[in-house]
Image 1: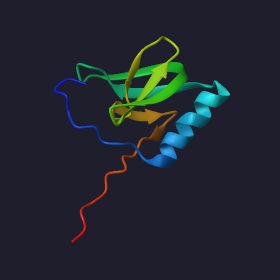
Image 2: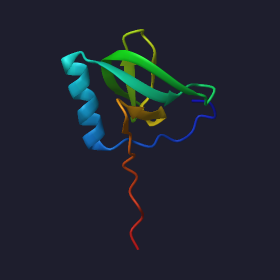
Image 3: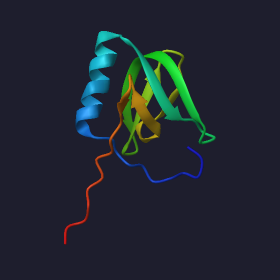
Image 4: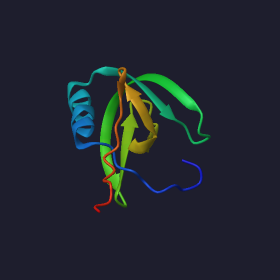
Amino acid sequence: MKGNQNYVPISCLFFDRLQDWATKKEIVVLTFFNEDLKIVAKSSRIIDLFTKNSEEFIVLESGENFRLDQLISVNGFRVDSCEIAPRK
């Protein structure tokens, strides 16, 4: 993502859902922000999910990979972040 923005983790439940789709090798419809911050929709299989420098990434069948906080939705399910509000 341009601007080297701080990574915001996605919810653990959604990460688990991504792992399930990857394990089942299902073709999913992903909507995400590309490097130019344009919204892209693509059908693909999820090949891998990995962590690098405390950031989580997805790898698609095409070889394309990007940070999980660039995801907007998968199969119509909105991706939630797991930002934690500061305690008062």
